[in-house]
Image 1 (cartoon, rainbow, N blue to C red):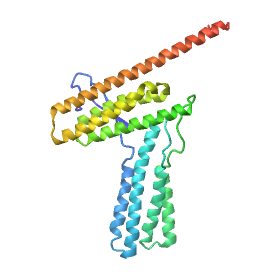
Image 2 (image 1 turned 60 degrees about the horizontal axis):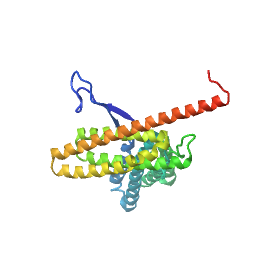
Image 3 (image 1 turned 45 degrees about the vertical axis):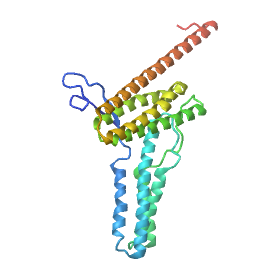
Length: 292
């Protein structure tokens, strides 16, 4: 899922003889080449249906549209599943995109068979086979919420909602900067995303931290997204070094703030644990239990 970039000869490397400033963890798109290849069959079907007469053309174009929709649903379903797998607390996808993609693939292949010489029975067989192969290749969507033991459902639902919103802000921010086609800026945004996701993981592990982190994962990330949108629009019209410097400084300030808050949350968690241990030991001593 992830690959680390950064080193002596990388764009943001520190140079020979010095340690790199920091490795950047870049997340690879979950919808890989295998899923992207499924956008090819609807194009082929549409072109091969052009000489099949009115009925064949209509069936072919409808089938191509259904196959294209299935490929898009699969693409989004794989991304949703990857986000679900990456989180410790997550809701199951509201729309079972991968299963819908499997069903639509079967329907599309059935219509494709009807444009040729397969006949009704043969087309049905092709559609069923395509559905089964699609499920075997890509699986089905997660069917249950992912929860943690010992934490009430209300708290976990609150965390799940905040995490989904935070991830949406981070993705939108990355999309705005990616439109500039500047790899160094992309990596700088990813570096900030890593700091934000470290806070997200901390909150997922202990939802009691949500109250303190909510402003960071909500208001601050929304502001970062809006700033990225305005910067991308300004920089696209003319590469202004001052605007770029201001945006990079904003990312640095946000990253520092997120890191400091995450460390504070971890320190507070440790302090709470030490207090609980001390209280438990005092209670055991009052009960006459002396630990060795």
